[in-house]
Length: 253
Image (cartoon, rainbow, N blue to C red; front, top):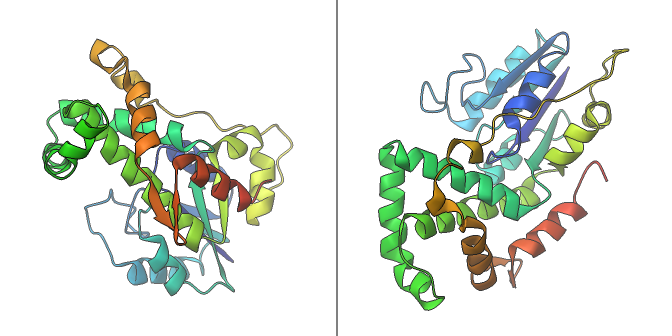
């Protein structure tokens, strides 16, 4: 019996990694859900984490491995509730905060352009709260800059929580490069003679790359990341500092 929680804000091949894990016999894997038994999309039959975890404990009587991927529960809550003697808790992200933020940005842009009300609200809130700050660093206040700042905060703040509360950090790139080592290190025994491979999932960028107005997205993030910082352990840190903190806690190094 093994219970494993792999938490991620997303944009780290969580779909592909979940599909790969489902190839293992006698395993139950949830992805993008807050109901481990029903595996419904987030927002449908959501449970409190305590209830979700109890479902995992119950299902572990039926399966050798119970694994949750990308449930988006608060890392500090997960670490508080789980029994670390029986449950492993990993954070999953990219080695580059910059690349993970860019993926989140393209996802947000696609959602905004497709009329999702939550992204219209986010755009409005960022515009109201940070509009003057964006102007002060020489950026226009528009959909691009506001959604980029949203992605910058959304990804980095969650990853900082994973650094603080997860037992170890997993990097998407390491998992894709060496799936067998990944399985061994998280405690899964799997006899398989053929080579193991994790396919990269669909790209969020590919859904919007045809829009010329996004051609300078990298430059916008560069400017934001050089002027906006995070408070962590009584220090002001950049996304590049976050990369270093993640690497120091990596399981697969």
